[in-house]
Amino acid sequence: MLKTIVNAFKVPELRKKILFVLAVVALYRIGCYIPAPGVNVNAVTNAVETNPSLQFLGLFSGGALQRMSLFALGVMPYITGSIIMQLLQAAIPKLEKMSKEEAGQRRITQITRYMTIGISTIEAIGLLTLFNSYGGLNPIPGISPWIMRVLVVGTLVAGSVLIMWMSELITQKGIGNGMSMMIFASIVSRFPLAFVETFQSKATQTFGLHVGIWGYRIIVTLVIILIMLAVIALIIYIEGGQRRIPVQYAKRIIGRRQYGGNATYIPLKVNGANVVPIIFASAILTIPSQLNTVFPKVAWLSRTANFLGAGWGNWVITFILIVFFAYFYTALVFNPVDISDNMRKQGGFIPGIRPGSQTTKFIETVMNRITLPGALFLGFIAIGSSIVMFYTKNQVAQQLGGTSILIMVGVALETMQQIEAQLKMRRYDGFFE
Image 1: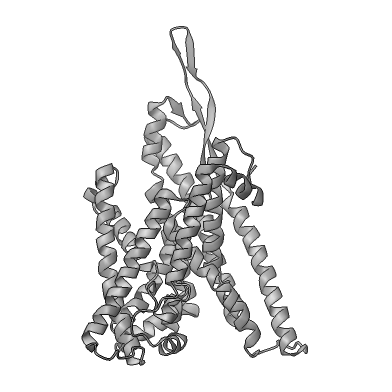
Image 2: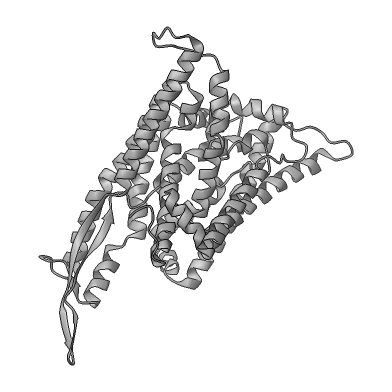
């Protein structure tokens, strides 16, 4: 991995892209520490710490929500808008047709942006109402309370739009996926504080270990880190898993030259959706928390948000959503009909399978079969490690939960693969050789 990064910095174009991504992420992290005007940071922090649904909502903001900062809404409004548009594309044929055209893709992107602004505005008003009930706003002399509320909402919406813009810049001009990179930065940024809180808090249980509070903290933290290293190794192993479908191309003789006749394969990844199911599932689970900020006095909504924010309710729904989005996103980006048609046009065929509908059905069957173990793996890792972390009551464990670690490893691998692909084009040896 270090060799890949060193080689990447030797290529001027790649070096500029990596430095660009680091600069954008640094600006994002700075914005997480700039509070909105007139905010009582201490009151907001206390409100978040006492509300499980807000804690879950703040997990992907990198501490920005606890400070009611410029980027308090995080990247979730943008992800929610993207999810809605992708679901609509699957349900509305006209949108699906638009998504296959360059002009249509630009139109869909524009609609997603407008949708993000609308979601951000609703969520900003909800957060303002909720935190104001906790004393989260300090009156500014000479400024009307209503003007101050407009300033806070405008600041949060502007921050959300700025995150959306930075995410798109990373995707277009940098390395990796912008949305994933923002979430990655938010999760990683909380680790130092988690270690500090772990060694400052009092141990609640020792599991029969007579080693004192400090000994208990050290032992549990080391065990958690070892478990997570093993999980990371397993994730990397599964991420590299493929089912290769052999493809044979027929020989064609044009004049005195022979074309085709070579053999290749279609690589189907066990986890073809990468971290997208995790991110989408997390975004869906934050919706009740977002609605709870808009309607804080609705009792059943508060109970639902708390139920989905932590505990077995969160684990069960997370598992179901991960499996669903694994199939949904794989089907969205991997079309057996298109693959079959392209093979037929180029004179290719799968040995033992008739071209056309039989080839399409065969590819679809194989894809569904290998997607299942990949989806189950993501689900079990996400909730399994989260259950262990929940019962240890360890701050490092809470930050290194299954969802967080899957996103981190997945984003890191995806980014390294993109760097590796560009390095191979320039004949550099890298991480995956």
